[in-house]
Amino acid sequence: MNYNSSKNTSHLLSSPLTGTSIGVEVVRDVSVIQLIEGYRLRLGVDISSLFSGITKLQLMHDTHTGMSFFSPLVTGDAAFYATMSRRPGYHRPNKAEFRIAAPYIPAGVRVLEVGAGVGHFTMHLKDVDYTGLEFNADAVAEAVSHRRNVCSRDVRDLVLEQFESFDVTCAFQVLEHVADPLGMIGAMVSLTRPGGRIILATPNAGAYISRCRDLLSSPPHHVTWWEDRTWGWVASQFGLIDLKIQHTPIDEMLGVWAQMIASDGVARQLGLTLDPVVDESPLRNRIDQLAAPIARTILAGITHKADVPEAGHTSVAVFTKPEAATDRARSGAAREGHGMAVRERKRFDTVGEMIVDFFVHDTPDALENRRVSSGGTVTCAFLGHTFPGGLPSGFGMAEIGVWHGETTIKLAELLPEDGFLHIFDFEQIVQAVSRRLSVAGHTNVSGFGCSTKACDSYNWSLMRLLISNPLPIYDYIYVDGSHAWEIDGLAFFLLDRLLKPGGYMDFDDYGWSMAASPALNPTACPEILNWFTDEQIKTSHIMLIVELLVKRDSRYHEVVSNKIFRKARA
Image (cartoon, rainbow, N blue to C red; front, side, top):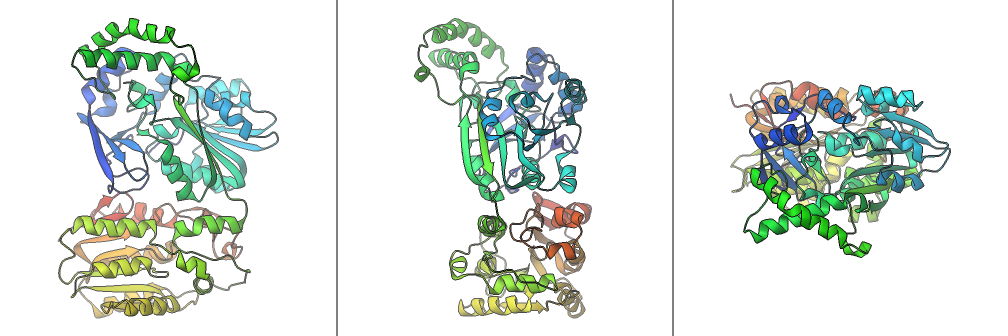
């Protein structure tokens, strides 16, 4: 396995993909006692230490992405996977997903496999430059003994060294094990060259596997379940194209499928119901025994592949990273909320000059198709959910970074008559958005603009507000500004002074980096290399601010994962 979390337990009511609880539903409760007992009796593995203090799990479903996940997320530790990897067949050399993926990988390319195990996938490839990443020391040792290039590295660390260096990045049966699948996919996309492929395979939650009471589909082994439509969400989130989804045949899992059908049939005839996820009750064992001859009869009666489900255990999703900067800007601009048009390149002296030029040169088509960013959508939904009766009287908001004002207008619409909204951005942007708001009839919005000079930013305006307001004035602050540590790091401390106790601070684009940006990566924007180091380009600055400043401040309570934080009341 690869891409471990720093903690084995993560209490989540929010989706690991969207970072919000909006659209997340409880599917069912899962008994930890049954889970521990099942792992002990069926697999000979003691997992009790991983569930210390936890008596119940909940299976959750994210209706926006199609992903299901267990809460809390209890992932296996190194000892657990060391034990599992010694089980016969755990690292199978001839997985069906290997055979599906191999034709997408021509000879002569660089391949990175995350969670490589013992490197069996290499046997399906011809004349490639292969690197495998794996945390299990025994698996790495076995791979090396077979002269396979597998090492113990974190894929996130590799991004800093080999950005866009691989023609293909792939991970087979890995994502469902990790607490931060979005971060893992993001790192893989960053490591893939433009025009390269990303291949991901997980158990298919839309097939029988989510109903067959297989313990290995539950924590601490699997902590997320992936449907086919989740891959479409992933493609949209990362600006990937040419998505192709294939399923492994059910052949090698026919016995499991037949046993599920037979056991469910016997239970129904007896007027009973078996839990489809985890059921280690004596009743389940007895029903399985009664159903075993029926399962064998079902298998004996299969004479044609049309007699069984078409989709087997695993879904294999193949994505393409857009080839050119032009394509990347087109595919990723909507996700970033910028609608940046493809245009003739200019040379800029400062970041501010470049951003304002992007703003001015949005094409009519881009302007017509502008929409609220995904982060802004979550913000507006959160406000509606938190204040179902409307925002309180006198509610004060600040939006740091407004672009064309799509989120700004939605926030203004939520304001009570005596509320107010302050917007901060470059002067030219603030003026344009202020005109839009005025035309729309929003008069309780004030703009604070800064110049495009290299050392100017909205922090100077925040300083002036601190001078004129010795007491906090804001109930909600939405930060979607520079995404740069040297500006937003200071901005956090200034905004904290302006945020009332009990107020909320909301950070957009937790995982965003210049390297992964379709418009600001060094290929699309060479000037970025003059303004930032390679490490700064490849790192998410908002992630640093959230992790190092916000989460380490005991006054802030995380409300929406990695995004919205509430300041403690005095």
